[in-house]
Amino acid sequence: GTANIGVVGLAVMGSNLARNLASREGNTVAVLNRSRSKTDELVAAHPEAGFVPAFSYEEFAGSLQRPRTAVIMVKAGGATDAVIEELVRVFEPGDIIVDGGNALFTDTIRREKAVRETGINFVGMGVSGGEEGALNGPSLMPGGSDESWATLGPILRSIAAVADGEPCVTHVGHDGAGHFVKMVHNGIEYADMQLIAEAYDLIRRGTGKSPAEIADVFAEWNRGELESYLIEITAEVLRQVDAGTGRPLVDLIVDQAGAKGTGAWTVQTALSLGVPVSGIAEATFARSLSSHPEQREVSRELPGPAEDSRDALRVDDVDAFIEKIRLALYASKIVAYSQGFDEIRAGAAEYGWNIDLGRIAAIWRGGCIIRAQFLNRITEAYAATPELPVLLTAPYFVDALTRAQSAWRDVVATSARAGIPAPAFSSSLAYYDGLRAERLPAALIQGQRDFFGAHTYKRIDKPGTFHTLWSGDRTEIEAEDTH
Ligand code: 6PG
Image 1: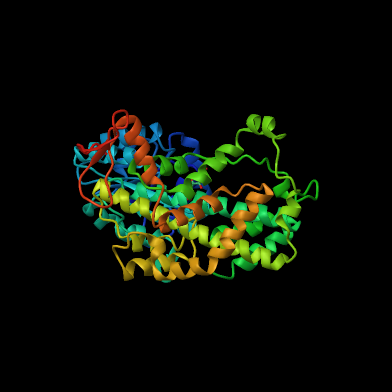
Image 2 (image 1 turned 45 degrees about the vertical axis):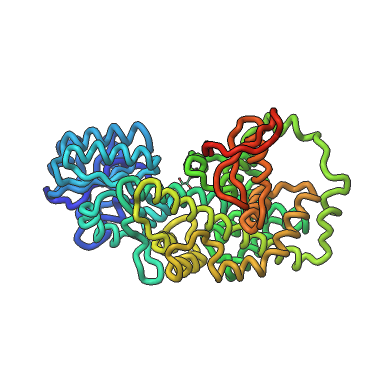
């Protein structure tokens, strides 16, 4: 074999990753696709890449130096299993199979275990940054064994995005850890996008500014603490004018947000782990709500607030209003990241991964969709306190939340009064207040559970587990702990 790495699956992500690999000194890249035409096209379009095309798995395996390394870039799910099966057939012990698709981490755990039995290494790797990132430098989140990382590390470091001089890749943890972290990245991406959308909606409805004018607001925000790729592209999207009609493109796009499932996985996994990722959940559900036109149609006549929303917003000082929204967005964003890192922490504990949370924030600074300067603050927070139980309690974030909280409350109250949905803003604030609360009404819920199901409760003033004889004489007895 002459190639030191191969790529299977030459749709846009796969071909871009293959081109990225081929552009780095010392790499020769073998390429294989299910249909021959894609391979021919790629090889013809990029003679400079020096690809080694293969048209069967046998030929592919033969073209690779040992230990063979192949990156799978196909649709997550059944297609991935099919490719793995073929590679296992033609590869030998010590070879490395990398899945760079958006696989569900539990699938990755299962596949890693099955492939390991054959002596072949299997690495599930999160790849973020879309088509552009795959070509010019993605953020990479590989899981898998230490042995695989020893071989893969240098290659991955050479193709990853670079942030502050450091490649955006780290060995996240064993088996499914990389795909788990990529999943949470996407959950945070959903929250970030929803928060930006709510800010846009409030500014538009509250001030009557045009999309192009709001683009200027986002461009301005992008020069401050909100600086991020998503804020930057928001300005671009808002500025876009439809060529045919001359209207802002955003006004012509159907207002139903799609989703390929990674946001839902983040929420489902968080529910199983018992981690309250309420901002991410609201962002995911907001997409679901938007995508039910039949329900929205029959609901259009439901009564809204008595005053018209312009009055309820009462925006006399436009600049002050916009600044409040900026602060609400920043505070809610801190909540979303805090919740996401909470999920990674809980996932690591549950699945036995040793994940360096500060490193995760560091490799998200470049290449990925949620890249932002802000991530440096997270790295610093974990550097100062590695066992930080709640990210938003780090001094930097406490300071930011202290500055933002009164504006945040105003924005949430105003949106409720005006009848403008701001589910991610308001749930983030509720989470913040829930965490801060000295006493929560969870005590009452324990009372109710004990009433109808003898589920028992604990007391603040003495140890033990108790049950009140609600249907008897209502005396309290000591009980077995049933949770
Ligand atoms: C990335 C993105 C990407 C994701 C798309 C689509 O990090 O490059 O997260 O992996 O698949 O953004 O996600 P939805 O279709 O669910 O919005």
